[in-house]
Amino acid sequence: MREEGSQGTKREVAKSVGTDPQAVERQVASIAAAFASARSARVPEQWSTCRRKAVADRETKARAAVSLAERGSGGERRCGLFPVDPSVRVQAVEYTDHGPTTVARAVAAPSSTPNNPLPQHVSVVASPQLDADLSLGMGVAMEAGRHVTLLADCAAVGRLNEAAEAAQLADGVSWGPQLRAMCDGLHDVTGRDVVVYATQDVTAAGEPASGFGGPAAGSKAFRPSWAGLHGKATACLASVFQVPLGEETARICSAYDHLVSKKQYSTVSRFGGDHKVHMMGNALIQNDGKATSKGYAVAHRARVESKVFGAANDVCLQELAETVWQVVRRRLPFMEAYREAIVTPEGAPFMLGATVTNIISLTENQGVRLHLDTEDGVWTIILWFHRHGGVVSGGEFVLPSLGLCFQPLDFTVVVFAANTIVHGTRPLSTSGDVIRWGSSHFLRYQDADALAQLAAAHGVDGLGSLQEQQLQAVWAAKREQRAAAARRLEAGMAERRVRAIREHAAAGVRALVTDPATGRLPPLLFWQAS
Image: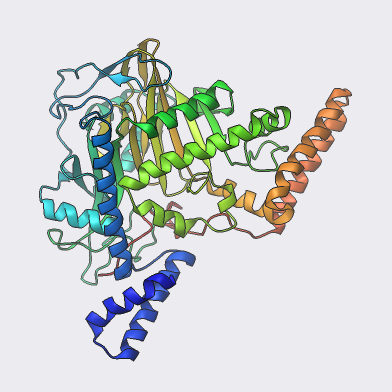
């Protein structure tokens, strides 16, 4: 436990156990042990009183910051379509071109197609007090009066995840009739701020009645219930919110514009080659023997070849990740605790700044098949923004097991358990020059650990120079048209890289409890004892 909080903790403990010094010290030691486990063990099992108060304090500051930002940007000036009529579906959105430095703004009214009702396993939290209690306990700081809180039955979510995967399998490589039938019935929450909690029955001993999405059977995978949820356990699964236009959104757009204009990314194919993704960040390309240090190979070649843009691109990527991270932290303060618990000192140099992101992906006007990101961290951040003018039709982001979909507007953000909740983007069509960019910020465990092990072998600062030396050697062989020699060099580099990874045990991220049946990670890392 940090020293600055120990005296306050003792005062709180004294109120509950009396003034006996030994009793106070024993209780403080117990809380300190629990807090230490949250920083170094596999999973934290308890939040201390002072920890919960810290969350409440962050929530209050976050709401004040959001209100201040809105007042500074003209009160009601928010992105996209505001307000959106919740009784209708949004099937197309029109954007006007405001130039290269400003975010386009949706101006078209939604269609008159009636919105689908929420599915039976999802309900709205009508009690403001229950909503406030859930927000406090979960470390969620959505703005009062501007969000909808939903409860989704855990067992039904699990069954629908399986149904969505089965529909994807039945349709094969495209969005076929099975998926269309499933997704046409989803409830549209376009333009609204939404928080989704999973609920699950608990046993008499307070344990979850059945496992879901990650933790082993019998573990305390969900927090205990609050008033109004007797006999239920709860866990946060997803949050969708709209970011007000302002300095941060302009800074984010400027960073993306720089990276795209300089082509500082590596393009990879997914889902049978029909899905092109631009990738950036601190990653190890497993099929590229030359990628021996942090970053995709194309980024390293740019650093070596260009003394003008190389370092600037690294700074730009870090500032981009940190700006998005700050936007998310204001709404979801628990993300900071997640970062502290999961990122190790060995892994920190390979995150993009003070975040829990090591890879950023970017797509352009694309749909994405339904999938689970089973190799990624617990929480994935996705944001969308638009460029130029035109109409976007379709392209809803879908969460079938939650019964929800939405049309991403300018700076719609979703933060969700991507390794637990099946998700995808429906195919879209555009007219005019409009571009809808969709970008994911996530943690790839394999890359973080491999890079940490390479750093243990060669030193963090040594990776860049090692990469440059190896690339120069390969290029020299190719310039001399010694293709066989170049292949031998590359093979030797790959062999040495694999050997260095195997010989060192540095971990970039902490190990997590996984469900032995599914191998998936838990949707929530932090839960609180009653």
